[in-house]
Image 1 (cartoon, protein in one colour):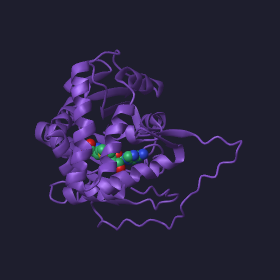
Image 2 (cartoon, protein in one colour):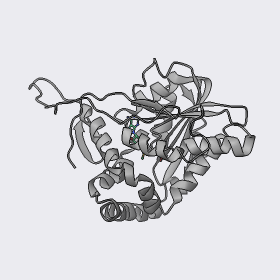
Image 3 (tube, helix red, strand yellow):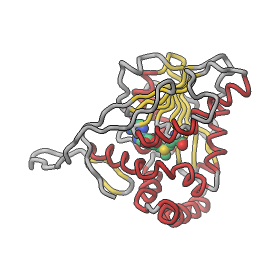
Image 4 (cartoon, helix red, strand yellow):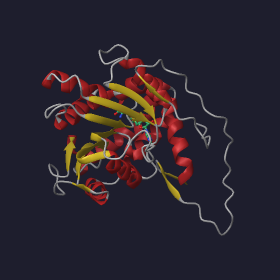
Amino acid sequence: MQHNLCRQTLRLSFSSRSSLRPCIRLAHSDAQFTSAPQQQTRTTAFGFKTVPEDAKESMVKEVFDSVASNYDLMNDATSFGVHRLWKDTFVSSLKPGRKGPLRCIDVGGGTGDIALRILDYAKDNHYDRETAVEVVDINAQMLKEGFKRFKSTMYHNTPQISFHEANAQSLPPSQFSDNSYDLYTIAFCIRNCTSIPEVLKEAHRVLKPGGTFACLEFSQVGNPFLSSLYDQYSFTMIPLLGTILAGDRDSYQYLVESIRKFPPQPEFARMIRDAGFSTGKDVDGGAWTDLWGGIASIHTGVKV
Ligand SMILES: C[S@@+](CC[C@H](N)C(=O)[O-])C[C@H]1O[C@@H](n2cnc3c(N)ncnc32)[C@H](O)[C@@H]1O
């Protein structure tokens, strides 16, 4: 896997009303990190590697460029379909549409798994055909897969769904204005972002007062026996499946490593509060809800 340092990308937004324009990148030059001796390069984790902070974004982009076309298949293969149950639990716990139509933003929304569930839940449970989801992702390839998928749904070409290329850490205020969403969801994305506090700050900015932040992410397994089984499975099987099914070991190795680098539940809950959200108490069933012993967990907060 080659890591180009993409300095500039063309921001692309496309809604289901318009035809999908091709993803065009402005010409970019490979950046060189020639730090002056007295200058300190800020670093961050990219899986188990330490990389310069400003390199991570393009490295993550490259991972998802590489996995985009196989993403749904690989999700099913590596989790035996369990990710579907977790996503169902995540969305149904938020009860979209129960108190009337919502304006939602799904960040790191990729191929639209969460957006589709939100719209289906609101329709099936509350006869709500007005709730709308804006899917935001840094990666145009993932968005393209999502757009393709929505073409075969009743939401295609309606104001209920739109796709936007943007960075979770810096949502352009002209497009994503302050205090404008009722629900902000982010699933299996935030661990890939360079700065979690920056993502949370943006989530807080775009939510209306009283709006809900909800994150589904891989987390820390409490039970040592389950934790060691899970470690053995993920570090051997997932990169192997990546090699066999997608011809890409490195990307899947990164995805497993990034899970282990994500802060444990109480620490992430504290970060959510630091960004200005109120949460439940620091216990399972309070600030977060563990799924499958903490393999994944749902964190929620309300903008105060
Ligand atoms: C593991 S996928 C999850 C996709 C989808 N939410 C799901 O649950 O199936 C992570 C997504 O986050 C996106 N992503 C990573 N870093 C991002 C960032 N800084 N801003 C926006 N999206 C980002 C990736 O491009 C990818 O589509």
